[in-house]
Length: 325
Image 1 (cartoon, helix red, strand yellow):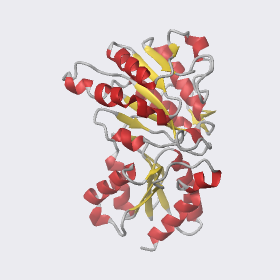
Image 2: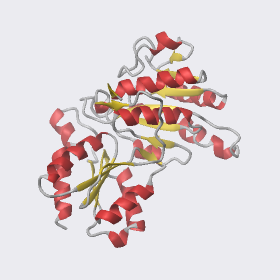
Image 3: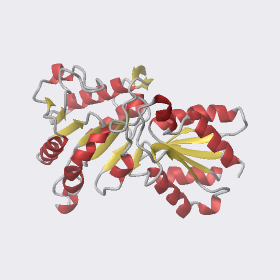
Image 4: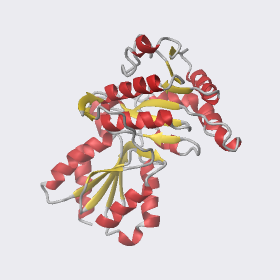
């Protein structure tokens, strides 16, 4: 094992997969000599050249169209979007083309495309550069949505995504890029669609993903001092969703708290709450609780930005209230 950052883990995954398969290419704005908006692709152009690490025009619609066509032609493009908010400009090609080709061709055409989205708030980038739009992506049949919470997951899931023959939305929370963690020296992949029990517990299940995993783990440590033993489920993949791990946990604890930064209305949390109601209702000791981002644009002001999404103290309070029900 070695200790590296989240962005270094992503860079290693990209480098290793490009070395393994010459059909893997990178596309995006300023990903070459500049190294990408968050330096994930730093020096890769020196290693693989401009034909495989391609700086694109400043047009997300063009990038999505070119990448979809390249994937259908036998390449394996990995696209970096500067900020996840700009995926709004890619939706026609992603939703109406990339996600549909396998179905419409009866499996004869595959679209092995990975779209990397730096998501979330915490950097003071304000309303147009701080959104968490993963639930929007989950609404589209034909797409897979992945959201790693640490360097180990970032590398293993990225390698799995590049090898997958389906279009994959790969969410990377901006506050995690400098997070440090242990990563194996040897080649490995993490199965897409498989959640991880980050911490076992007996009293309630906290179901979460992405940056919220780190906050939930901190809250769980504080809850432990109050005699509350929380189980933490890291979803890792939002689509397909690992229903079994969620249901097994809720059946064991009888209580479910769902936490994410994305807005509450139409969020992933609502889907998980419905799943629990449908498949684990007799085991519940209290109603399912959703703790999500407020239904507001992300403010620039630091204190308001923090207030817009759940923090450690909020998670702790929500869990304590749930235990009293």
